[in-house]
Amino acid sequence: MEIKLEKNERLEDLQCKGLKIIQNKDYYTFTSDSVVLANFIKLKKQDKCAEIGTGCGVISVLLSAKTDFDKIYAFEIQHEMAKIAEKNVILNKLEEKIQIISDDVRNFRQYCSQESFDVVFSNPPYIKTGDFKNINKARDIARHDSSLPLDDLCKVAFNLLRFGGRFYVIYTADRTAELIDTLMQYSLEPKKMFFTENGKGKIVLVNIESVKGGKHGIEVLPNLITNDTTGEYIKILQTKNFLKKQTNIDFD
Image 1 (cartoon, helix red, strand yellow):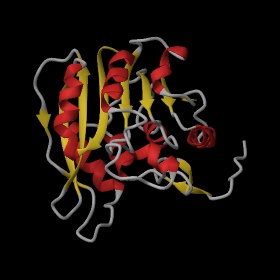
Image 2 (cartoon, rainbow, N blue to C red):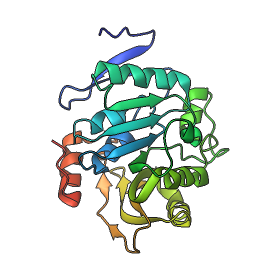
Image 3 (cartoon, rainbow, N blue to C red):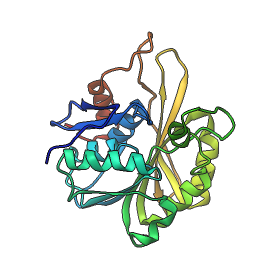
Image 4 (tube, helix red, strand yellow):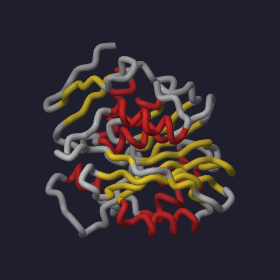
């Protein structure tokens, strides 16, 4: 099926097993955050997954190259972004593996059963509302937590996951304590964690894998440097090699 690009849309090569992605510069476009999280997520064959806030669908699309998961239900609150994500699913011939749901994830019971997922993952909006305002409404929703406060994010993840299920999230590092506290309030026990830094020694983001009903105890992995000293993003291969070494996941 031929995919027609709309005004301001561009087609990009993900440089991973022939996967491609459509983005629209008028909306939120994915960054290294999504790539790092996609490489951190560990899936088992036949896992049933849910993504909270899929954006253009890049994380779910990248995960299709890693393992033969059962299905991903990818929620996106912004209808225009959901349309782009749907185009990307069709573009990569993943209609049987990824279902885009154009709705607020808090309405998930209309589409799937509670406690029915093995894995939930999210690159959510993590800037506190009021800290910074973007004049582009679509980007503002994607970046600020007014559309999905941290408490709601963790509560939904808890409700979606079966006991023993895993929740992967990437969040701004300056809210790490708040994130861990909220995860534990919902019995999502952090098990693995690492920070990303920008090449100039500044810690930027935190990545956490938590387990619903898991035992206490967390493994803190070495920091991942995502940018060189000039600010340029380091190639994905280096990210993959680091994470493969640290988590024993094969991303090729």
